[in-house]
Amino acid sequence: MRRYREAEYENRGTRTRKRKRKQAMQRKILGFCMFTFLLGVLCGRIVFAKNPEERPAQAEAEDIGQTEYGRNNQEPSEAEETAGDYASAGEEAGDEEAWKLVLVNKWNPMENGYKPAVAEIENNYYFDARAVGYLQEMLAAGRREGLDFWVCSAYRTIEKQTDLFEDKVRRVTAETGLTGEAAREKAGTEVALPGTSEHNLGLAVDIVARDYQILDEKQARTEEARWLEENCWKYGFILRYPTDKTEETGIIFEPWHYRYVGEKAAKEIMERGICLEEYLGVTGSSL
Ligand SMILES: [Zn+2]
Image (cartoon, rainbow, N blue to C red; front, side, top):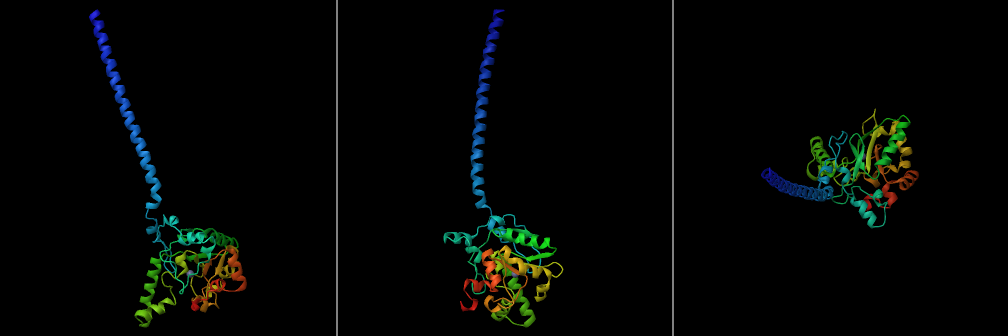
C-alpha cells in the first residue's frame, strides 16, 4: 500500500513536472505566437503606410483616355490618387484658384509631366477630381430639363493625345500627300499636339446631344448646346472656343468643348463674350 502510495506520489510528482513542462512549453508557444503576431502587425502597418506611394498609380492613370469620339474602356482604378502639380504650385504661390485658370494652348504647353488627380464623370470618362462635381451638377441640371447630353471626351493622357496626333498625321499624309513637318503642321490644326490640349489638363469636356453626336458647327444648333452656352457659367464652365475667337485661341469654333475655370471667371468670360486668353490678358500668337 505504502509502496503504492509512494509510487502514486512519484507518479503525481512526475505528472506535476510534466504539467509544469507542458505549461512552460505552452507559455513559450503563446509568447512566440504573440511575438509573431506583433511583428506581423508592425510589418503590416509599415507596408500599409507605404502602400499608397508604392502603388503604380501614375502608370495606371496614364491609361485613362479616350479616342477622339469613342469611349474609353480602360480601368482607372488608381487614377484618383495621382497628384496635381498645379494645385501644389498654386498653393505655394498662395493662390488656391490658380489651377482653375491654367492656360493651355498651342503657344502655352502644359507643364511637363503634369498629371491631374481625376475622378469619373460617368461612362468611364474622367475629369479633374476638384471640379468633377460641378460638371456632374451641370449635366444633371440640364437633364432635369429634359436634355439628353452625351459626354464624348474628357481627360486624355499625354500618351493618348500622342496616339491621336500621330494617327492624324498619317491620315493627313494619306489624304494630301504632305509629309514631315508640313503634315504635322496640318495635323496640328485639327488635333492638338500632346501637352497643348486642355483635355490633357483634365479640365475640358466635350458634350454633345445624344441624337447628334457629330463634332461640327451644326452641333451648336442642338437644344443641348444652346442650354450649355446659356447656363454653363453657373457651374464654373465656359464655352472655350467661341466662333469669333479662333485667332486668340488658335482653335476653330467648337460648340461641344467646355472648360472649367470656376464660377467667378466663367461669369465674367461668358457675360463679356471674351475668351480665356483675353480674360488672362495673354493673347495667343503675341506670346
Ligand atoms: Zn474638346
